[in-house]
Image (cartoon, rainbow, N blue to C red; front, side, top):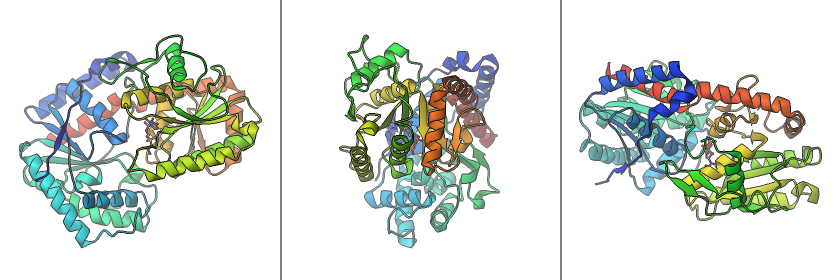
Length: 473
Ligand code: UDP
């Protein structure tokens, strides 16, 4: 018998949104929270996914569940379990929904049988605690197979899909052929973008709810410039000893101190704080094109500006489930070694320790805040949270016009690159922004306002609450 793991999350107070979003919007949030509490009365709202930590979905659930509890709802989060073949199948589905094969395995009757038997076991374990009338929000392909047994037991099932591709091909079609029969019993669906909704669900109850960022989390809370400098000195990106302790605010409200250093490949250890920085923060994934950012900057920016490029990603050592990360970082490192000295001096590769997620988030926060320009030159992107993270920090973001990035950058709030492989255009855009700081500041200010309007957690909660209200109506 499989066991579900309860994931505990601190309660987050809703009223901290009030000064940020204004009275009217806050009143709307409160009114919706009240209606949802009435609709939900006595029931539990469950959220189920495959992991308690690691990855964007878990990070987002931590925030949504925290605020859900803050509205007074009875919310519980459980992580399902499965065996290796089960996760091989769900990873294959994941890759194929993104349009690539992933591996050579199939998605035939044998895989469907195994997927169903693990899903049934998780559903049985879940139904030991849930009651008819409860609401279960199932996330991503790993939990889709629980829809039917849960619905048969009288649970309201919502399936939320965090992935998708702009265009369909044989792989996306194969993945959806596998998943859609598993989802027949779901009452409602949530996708991050309209373009990701498969045609077969066009008559279903579908809500498009884009992801959001939490303005108060360690990744995004407003850090003073002294605190930013102290964190960046403590990790070794800026030179000199910190003037103040390198402290940061943890997710649970307590204070942490940066204890670990970044690993840096660069000529200068410890940059000057006054030097303009161009920053891309990504996993070491080929589709994020860190190598392309480096090549474009080396050829077209390094000798035309005094800016420094910092490519930032998570540490790859010990990440056994991401062999590609180490490979991509090694490729970037050898490309860096092949640059001319002058170019090398303008570029650093920074990997951040992942041992403590809040500490890692504070490092990312400080790097994004120190940036003059933020880049996200992905070749493919699901949503691209780093774009909203940069915009929230009032930075001009230069990013590829792919996937969800297009939904985030509106006219005048950043720069979209039509062709992310055009390195000359990329370099020209950067040089132009670096030479016109007034324009860059204007773009950054509009970007922050745009994110406050569209991509903060209160909007996200409101959309989810409305969906739950409609479902129970
Ligand atoms: N990120 C991080 N530490 C790192 C590198 C990335 O916390 O060393 C975060 C980044 O700030 C963002 C998330 O990982 O919140 C990546 O999400 P995004 O949607 O940009 O891309 P994904 O990795 O989901 O493809």
